[in-house]
Length: 354
Image: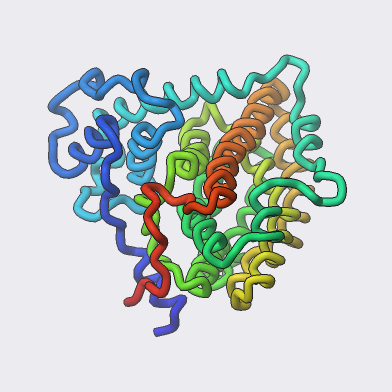
């Protein structure tokens, strides 16, 4: 069995439940481990108002509840995906998260999606920026790149899945363009070319475990929040324009960032599979950015112009959470520490095997 075939077989396996990080995530995992979700109402969940909207406890609780819609967890019945009690609990947490985002990312009546996307394309003069990809390109070590890949695996091993939820909520030009971009993300019909599969190749090249969700316990809240944002937007029709904004933000910033990450991997001597993931995104996402900007965003707003502010919100909420994650990573790395939660060293040399 080839490495890719073995990974696809393992992809059918659900990960174990992560360790709780506080009362909110403990309550959720306890329910999933066997308590009756119908035995108490949503008010029995510890109040999220006492927890940081961006903190470990709330973000992990949300991540666990969202994962019921993806791969699920070992020992957790699939029937709980749409359990009314769990959905009520998720709604309480979502409202706290979304309220914080709307407070921290205000959108003015004069803001437009076009302007917000133009802002994202402003690269620092001379390309001497201070972002994560700049750090990794210029001074990052192989260990830094491994940490980055481990944390990003929570996103990239489900890459394009959350955005697919917007398809039945789009129409005409926007839907056709979104399907075209998603078709590329899913490998254009070739299983080995699915972008999530290419990221697993990258992880294997860096001697990381490729199992889905393997690094969740090592991921700080800032990393969980970037993943939760996609699920929050994707699972709510009312937030469809915000999801389009998120997708547009990702595609607009991907190409230059991917170029720097490919350079970083070459500099530290990573193998061709690791370099390929980001090299593939340099050209592909440069094309995708134009399609998303003109046809997905443009097509959506042509039919529903009142959603312009929500597209802006999605763009800026994405940037807000990415900035928080960047601050966490760079603060740790520049201080000579790991960015992983609990200062746990990253295990290398372990791989998923059939």
